[in-house]
Image (cartoon, rainbow, N blue to C red; front, side, top):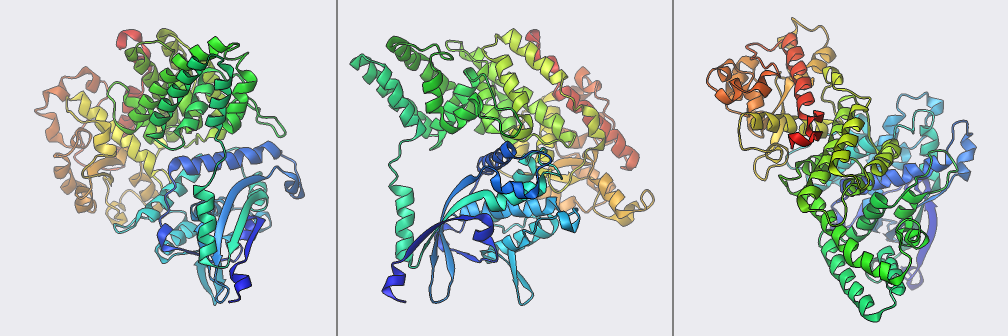
Length: 621
């Protein structure tokens, strides 16, 4: 290798198509794990789809995509061995992995299109040499997972799967859940064209590992750019003329930043997004092509600039004393309850249980966090604040569960106008008004509980079914006085719970009721034919006949026990409860189609009870 080539560094703007087409990338040992979380992939999908929808309009010609707004995804750094042309990823494998998962999803979305309507993107996912298919991310540990996702759109986890595989499958499901319905069959080819052509990446290539790692360190360790939070702080301090007061606010600011950064390195920016959207934003960009960003979007892209332009009209901050008082009092107050809400989403808080539920099954943070803060007011007692936050969280969970049993998505793009209007509706509400407003909004949700009758488990909704069964199981335990919670079923510290099919996957045992295998499997996956069992128990008995399984169910959670006739003999808490009597439980000595129908109707009644609007009655608290 010549010294000249060894020292060479190249940097070029490129597209996803040019970056990935028929390429192979090797992943260095020090960064093999794929660690993107749900919030990362959902933010990416929101950003991409929102940018596309700002330009796209029905009736556009394919060539119009070239003039759509571009989206900058960031840099990737490669080290290329000039002798072997082997290309190693030094920085950017998280993004390239996420792009690959999105391309696989998009390829599935167009699988039923006519050939002339499809956009060819398979060569961005894998290449074929000597009739052997290999994926662009060259890592043998990923091959089985990527192959399954590409070919059938799902992957069954193995016990020895590592963190990367688990995260890849989870993020693929997140893409499915958050991809907006607005990008329908007509718009999808335009989105794919835009995604592979208009999303800009800076490709940095070095021809020695030494140069590549130097670039990596420079990009990650030596940045001196001020963050939006720091620019906001500078502006606020410039408005406070008294030196002593300015130093006081500076000290307060530092203290609050430490608290926020204890949770996440970007929690400061998330906080200002949530606070300003919750309490002060009054407008949002209309969903038509060419529309300009409004308060909601401008806060997301540059809250420091937005505050500078709006503090007089929206915050009523016009002089040094008002700036001082606001950031001395209101700022720490809202940081405190933003963090309390954040903590309650991670660790079960009995005074705000619904925060745990929406952490598992909520809406995009860009909407959820400002909704949770919208109704609380500076100076309110903590008990009242917790009541308000939990009420909003209950509304969010009711919304997501009702949409999910109706097979409706709730990505940010699809619901942001509805949720932003609710933010404005509940902003600064007294408790009575908050309960009244949220109850009315729930009654206006068009998706109702009757859809439970047709709801079933499928390859992409296992996460939701686990949430639903955890809520049902913990609800029934609570009704009979058991000291268990949702967390004990959904994400316990010890042995995990798994979804149990009451019917074993044995079509031959059910031919008296079914002619077709697919019909049998549809019924086997109905929500009324599923329960939760501890991992191990589930694996030990899941292939047994029902008459053998039911003896084991009697030792499990209340919801599973109610299948057995013996449970109805000596359980006074169960037998004497009016709340339980209203649900109409019955035991099932056999488990035929008719039993699944009855059990599914029971699930519908339990859902109506769990998410009843009675919660929003003051006298009920």
